[in-house]
Length: 623
Ligand code: GLY
Image 1 (cartoon, rainbow, N blue to C red):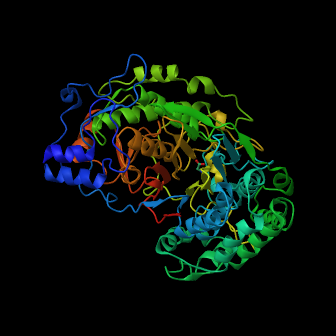
Image 2 (cartoon, rainbow, N blue to C red):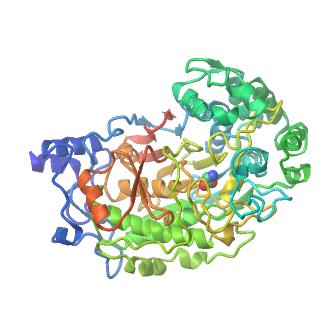
Image 3 (cartoon, helix red, strand yellow):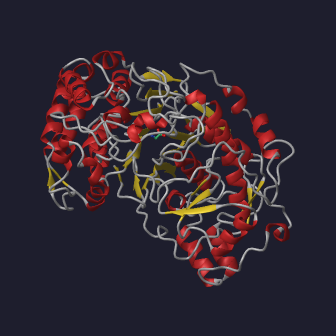
């Protein structure tokens, strides 16, 4: 029985073997195995020092990186892990769209089926998410696209918000030097929105269908769509903040509360705004009638964004971060996002371990947490807007630097992050406020897009008469070096506020190629700084732990971000034995509800597999 199940799981293989696509290590089966061998709490892990197996887990290689890591042991996941049987992967022969809302994914699929390409679908889904996912989908925020065309050319588009021209280094500090709430809620929290410029730039460069046709589905949805339970709950969670601003109250609340699930949700102001954008493109947003509405809103609430700020906004093409991991190639977002650099550092550190402890074991989590810690220390120190700061990217991305960092990792002890200033961490249930979508079209063009208002519903300010929310992206700057932002991130001067500067992001839209250079995965997630670690975790779950994409996405996640010096973990995702072992190694642990909302696509022998994260209400749609 044990051998039979282990063979089916494909987790106990010898050197260099890879399971066939589609039959790899289903978590559900793994759980069945654990249950069969002792139930939800397998035998406690011995202390790290005593646990050394014949092949020392985490052993670093001395020479060339071998293709596959050897994973010692079977996955350790509690039998009642809440998401293991909740994934509904979708397989399609030609094309796939996965986003955080099923209606938006259907919009993208229809565009693809109607002759549009991946960028056409990216534009249409982006506008649709503005309507159906108001907590994160946006035209009042910004985002990033990593795009690989079918010929193999990869480019990155940065449409991150910029600080207004009148922004100042200490604008969020009170007279005692403490951060105020002004970077989170209200008019001062907003950077100059980049989404409309970014989507238009992508379309102008690569789009095939007429622009108005791509905005049209969003207009229809804004005229009325049925609100689902997820979105009703997310509005309710922010009802108090939304209620502070008249246009937000009118648009999202009924008697101070979210409309219940099943309500026909109508947003006539937003439909009118989208019609203007369909007819006139970004000009109307950055110079015309919508710009006037934004500036009037700023004047009403003492915000900073001016007509000149809007006129001056530009989306920018950038060279993607490219790295390799055990023969796979990974493309991700360069600064002004920290995502690509930080994830590459983590991957480079982990790549040097030619044997890996089992998924979910304390030894494995220890190695990951230490790799994450070191990469985040560099992130917080060095990274910022490339137009404003010089960054040692070549060194940060090099395998030799990763080897230096790897050599610092102790076999069985946490190494505390050097103090900056103590921080208490942050909220309970994290992960919905940004949103990611992944697209592959019938020609094999792939787009990986993450977009955000920053916090849920951004600044909570809806532009009066225009029906869309403004971001609170200014909180992603270092408001005060050494003091935590809403994500508990403690950052340095490289990311300090300056007029027209882009605030550092953690968004990590990524594309993975297999060892033959073929498109393999398109992946990304929301989640503030946890974004980087969640994307890393899904990628290595597939590559190292041979999980199907569905299991890789459902698997429990952790986050270590240097400061606060804790491992955040999803409640119920680790066994008591693993938790005890981590504590014995010196880790402080903090449980939270859910981490991230991954939307991913994988190429398999059966076609494109699309997986929407079961943690929230997304959907995959293909043909
Ligand atoms: N606002 C979240 C991020 O850009 O990382």
